Amino acid sequence: MRPPTGRSPRRLMTSPEPAQDQTPARLAADTDVLVVGAGITGIYQLFRALEAGFSAQLLEAGHGVGGTWYWNRYPGARFDSESYTYGYLFSKELFEEWEWQEHFAQQPEIERYLNHVVDRFDLRRHMRCGARVTSATYAESSGRWAVETSEGTEYRARFLVAATGILSVPYFPDLPGRQSFRGESYHTGMWPETPVDFVGKRVAVIGTGSSGVQVIPAIAGEVASLTVYQRTANWCTPLNNRAITPEEQAQLRAGFETMCETLNTSPSGFLHPVCDRQAFDDSIAERLAFFEAMWDSPGFSKLTSNYTDLTANHAANALWCEFIAEKIRSIVRNPETAERLIPKDHLYAEKRPPFVTGYYEVYNSPNVSLVDLKQTPIVRVTEHGIETTDGARDFDIIVWGTGFDFGTGALSRMGIRGRRGLALEDHWADGPKTFLGVQSAGFPNFFFPGGPHAAAGNNPRYNGDQVDFITGTLVSLRDRGYDTIEVDPADEERWTSMVDTGAAASPFGESSYFFGSNIPGKPRRYLLNSGGRPKLFKEIRKVVDNDYEAFRLSRSSDPAEATA
Ligand SMILES: Cc1cc2nc3c(=O)[nH]c(=O)nc-3n(C[C@H](O)[C@H](O)[C@H](O)COP(=O)(O)OP(=O)(O)OC[C@H]3O[C@@H](n4cnc5c(N)ncnc54)[C@H](O)[C@@H]3O)c2cc1C
Picture 1 (cartoon, helix red, strand yellow):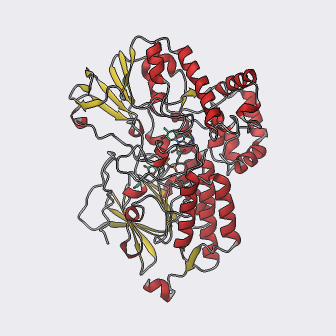
Picture 2 (tube, protein in one colour):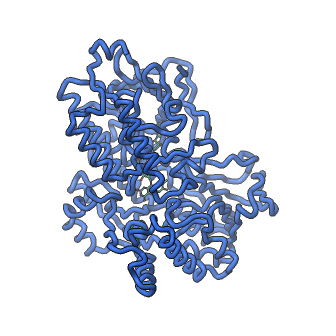
Picture 3 (cartoon, helix red, strand yellow):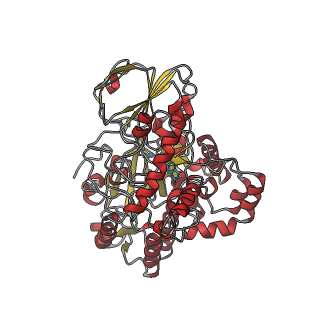
C-alpha cells in the first residue's frame, strides 16, 4: 500500500503544485456525488447529478471554469470541431439562445459559452475553483471517498467522478537548462490570463502539433522575429473557418432535432457526410477534383468524409498525402522550407491531423524561420535562448507547444487509492485498464468520463454518452437500494483487450501521442477507444439490458462489502 501523495513518478506538470499542508484537512462538504474538473464533461456531470436529485459538488484546479478552454487561451486557440456540434445538446433552449459566431469558435467565445451554461443552470454555487485534488481515498468501512485538495480541505462523497480531461497535463520536454531561461516562457496549455505582449519581440515556438500550428500564424504578424522549432512535420490542412451567417443560424435552429439525431448516431460525433467510394473507384481526374473538394471542406471532414479506404489503404493515403505535399510546395516559396514542412515519416492521420488558418503562408514572411530538430536537435535552453547543434539564438519569449501527457496524465496524478490502498497509477502501470472508459476494477464508486479508452471523435458527444450512462447508473442504484458499484475484473479485461486488439486497425500509428509515445517512459498502449462510439453504445445498452451484470452492486451495510 502506498501513501496518498497525489504525485506520480513522472513529474511533467508544472502548474501550481499542491500545497503539502501538514495540518488536518478541514471538512468542506459531504455529498452524494463529487465531480472533479470543470471542463465540458464535468460541468455536464454536475448538471445531470443535480438534475437527478443528488447532492453534488465540483472541484476544479484552475481559477475559472472551462477546462481545456480555460487553460488553452493562447492566440489562435479555437475549435477543430464545428461549434454547434461541440456545444451541449441537452437543452433546446440553451441551443437556441446561444448563437455561435463562427463555425469554429475561438477560445474566448468557448470560455464565455461554458460560463454561460454554468450560470444559466445555476451550477456555480456547487463549484469550487482553485481547488486541486491531491488525494482521493476509498474508505472500505463506510464505502465513501475522502478527497483532499490543495486548499487543505477535505470533501467526502459516495460517488467520485473524475472528469479531469485527456489533454489537461501539459508536457515539457526534459531539455537541459529549461528553467534557466530569463525571458518569458509559456506552455500553450497553461496560458496566462493576462494577454502576452508579442509586439516587436523575438519569439521561439517549440512544437508544430495542433496547438503550435494555431499559435504560429496568430502571432507571426506582431513579432519582430519568429523561429519555429519543428520536431515532426504534420499533415496540416485548412480549417476553412468562417462566420455563421444569419441564414445559417436560422437553419441551425430549425434543424436542431435532425442535427441531434445525426450527432447522436454518428460514429465520430460529427455531422460530416460519409463518402460512398474508395480512392481507386475514381479516375485520376475525379480523384483530384475530390481531393480539391476535401481541401476546401471544413475541419475534420478531410478525415471523416474522405475516401472510405483512406486510412486502411496505404496507397490511397499516399495519394492524399502527395496532394497535400503539392499544396505545401505551391504555398511555401522557399523549396527547402517547403520540403521540411512535408512529413516524411507518417501518412495522413497516423498522427492527430492539425487544422490551420494561414499556417504555411507565414513561412513566406522574412521574419519567420523554421528549424528542423531532426537535423539540428536542441542541445540546451540557455539564459537567453535556445542552442541547437547548429548554434544558439536569443529570444525574448519561448512558447512551448509541446503537448500533453495524453489520456492518463491527470488521473495518474490525483493520488487515487481504491480498495486496500490500491493506487490507480500502479493499477495502470502498464497502461490504463478500464471498462467502457468509465471504471476500473478495485475502485468502487469511482468513474472517469472523458478519460482513456473512450475517445472516439468529437469529444463532448461520447463524453456526454458516458455522463448519461453514469448518471443513469447512479439513479438505478438508488432506486434499488444499492450504494456501491464496482466493475468486474473480467469485464475490465474484456474492454481493455478490445481496445488493445483494435488498436492495430486504428489509423493512428504507434508514433502518435494516442499511444503515449510523446512521453518518455510511458507504456505504449492505445489510449483511445478503438471500438469507437458504436461499440460504446452497444456495450452501454448491453450493460443496462443485462441489469449491470458487468458490475458488482452492493449495499455498504452488506457484510461482504463492510469487510471487503
Ligand atoms: C487546444 C485544444 C483544442 C482542442 N480542440 C478540440 C476540438 O476542437 N474538438 C474536440 O472534440 N476536442 C478538442 N480538444 C480536446 C478537449 O480536451 C476536449 O474536447 C474537451 O475539452 C475535454 O473536456 P473535459 O471536460 O473532459 O476535460 P478538460 O476540458 O481537460 O477539463 C478537465 C479539468 O479538470 C481539471 N483537473 C485535472 N486534474 C485535477 C485535479 N487533480 N484537481 C482538480 N481539477 C483537476 C483541469 O484543471 C481541467 O480544467 C482540444 C484540446 C486542446 C488542448
